[in-house]
Amino acid sequence: MLPPLATDVSLCLYRIAQEALQNVAKHSHAHSASVELRVQNGQALLRIVDDGVGMCPEQHRVGGMGLAGMRERVMALDGTLKITSAPMMGTTIEGSVPLKKSQCG
Image (cartoon, rainbow, N blue to C red; front, side, top):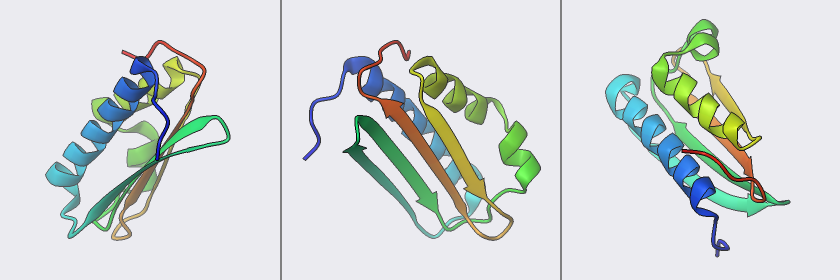
C-alpha cells in the first residue's frame, strides 16, 4: 500500500501518466500497456510500459510538447524522467520524484 502523497507529487505523477497513456492511445498501436506506481527509498516511482511501435532515439530525446511537459513536471520537483524506446520495441517511461519536494503544477 502506498503512503499518502503530497498533492503536488500526486498531481505531477497523474499528469505524466495521463500524457503517457494519451500517447499510447494516439501513437503506439500497442496491444497492451501497464502502469506501475510505487514508493521506494524516499521516491515515488511511476512506470508506464507499452508494447507498441516505439520511437527512434531522436524522437524521445527531442520529443513533442507532451514529452517536454513531462520532463518539466518532474524537473520542477527535482525528479527524473527516463524514456526507453526503439522502433518496433515499445516504449517505457519512468518518472521518479522525491517525496519531500513540492511544486509541480
